[in-house]
Structure formats: C-alpha cells, structure tokens
Length: 223
Image (cartoon, rainbow, N blue to C red):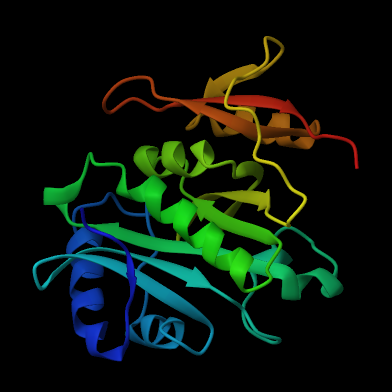
C-alpha cells in the first residue's frame, strides 16, 4: 500500500507539474493557483509537503502550512487574537492525479496533516474550501473541520474551516443531530445567514454526482 512521505526540494518540479495538471481540469475559482515560490517555501521554511508515489511518479501531494510570525495566517480571517496565531496550522492545498481519484486520498491527507500539526505543537487547524469544490468539501468536513465563515479569497468564495486539535480535543460526532439545519453548499445566501445567526457547518452529505452536497448546521457551542 502506498504511504505518504515528506517531499524535499528535489520533488519541486513534480509538485508544480501535478498542481498545474489538476488546476487545468477544475472550474475557475474552485482552487487557488499557487506560485512556484509558495511550494518552495512550504517544503521547509513555513511548512511541509507530503506526497505519495506510484513507482517514481508523484500521484498526490498535500501542503501543511506552519506559519511563522509575520507569515500570512488563516487565523486573521477567523479574527483570532494575536496570541493564538502561533498555534495555527494550515491544512492547505492538495492535488490528486485523476488516475488515483476515488480512493479517499483527500481525506487521508487531511487526517495525516492534522496528526503532523499536533506533533509540531499546533492546536488549531484551519483550512479553506470553495463551496463548489464538492469532493474537497465533503472530505474536509468529514475529518472534523467545521465551517465557521464564508469570504472572498483566492479568486472566489471560500468557506473558512476550523478544528481545534489540542491534546484534550475530541473529534466531533459523525452523526448529525435531528435539530441540524440543512442546505446546499452552493446556497450561499442561506449559508451566510446561518453563519450570521451563530451556526457552524459541522456535517456534509453527498447529494449525488455533480450535485452540491448538503451541509448540516448546528449552533456554535458555548465557550
């Protein structure tokens, strides 16, 4: 069975090539187009990149951001106080070769990066997903990252997702309560109203191929 391994600068050309191959197949606005420098920096300076190979061919990669003081930090989008920004880990971009899709790699890569973030002492995992990037949204929410916001970012609309991953934090229940409010992920007006009313998107159910999944919303737990 293929396993994720940490990539190094020798893998940079393969990472960039896979990124552009995957981006070319996505509708505009569904994923950020990253610079070569972004990948170079995340190989060591401000994160790590992990990948999986079929023989010598890179078939999937995922980026873990470990922002330093002064680096761009998703925590600012969540209005985190400055003293918490150093606890943030970014569950950042991924790419999976089309020949390897449907094997659950997106979910596996989110879970792997959360475990690695814990090892680095980070306690808040943050991510962004386009409401119309259905596979990524389902995979990300299924790992316990909940939708806490919706903003314009990376050339389109993005849900802001968060999961607290400190040593005393438990994963959420996979079962939605009967009181959950459901709406389609691309019904942005309803999503925004629920967020404004203090709900977070904790559950996500597929509605069939090519159809927006349903998000299950529940009140934000009291602190």
